[in-house]
Length: 288
Image (cartoon, rainbow, N blue to C red; front, side, top):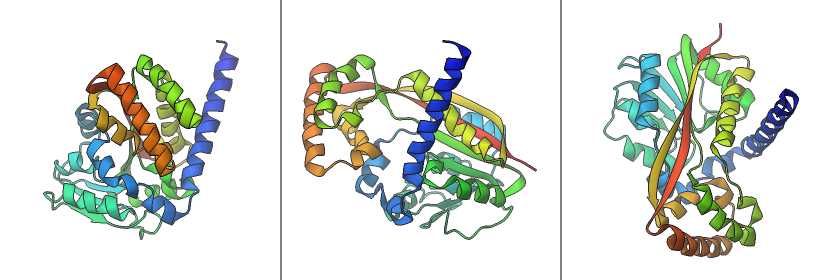
């Protein structure tokens, strides 16, 4: 592929991603705040965790210690909170979803250094130059960029870091996906999409570039990790129900879809399905 075509493809992907993200952060705050409520318990149970090697590398780079103060934006049920809480640092978590907030408090009850507030970042009263790290774990895309980057910048100390963590959607082997494609076509063709490693890497790269495009931060380092896992068929279907395209489906349609998916998955995979996903961190330094 020529350099011109590669550049054109990259610009198209970036435009598509920005438009997709705009669909989410443009929703009413109340809708955004309760979006995952129907799947909060499932999210807590089956969403993948961030690889320990990712956490270890971040800790090494930022020198997190018990004196570190972290502001976490949109902590969900505390998936990224717990690994940092174990290090003894002080964490203020902002989570607008009441169901996630309840789960996060349960998951962090052993860590008195963690405070979880049921509020949105938009409504939170800014504490200027207070935090060593602002953490966003698969959450920044839910907040308008003109708000999230500006307010994150203002809340950081002058030598502070913006740390963005991402887990991409879990993907089955392509051969397994091909067996599911006809079912997706039958119920909702928009669900018939498969992201190979190159596509996911490009998406992760673009997500990282958005914080640089804000003009508030400069990249220190970014790294991608690949993880392979096995899920039971029931847990995989539970996982799908935590992804936004499935949350939007009409209940009966979803039930019928999942019944057909379960039949073919049990026929082709047995009791377990092999999945893989990419995780990444983007560590950005506050600009002076």
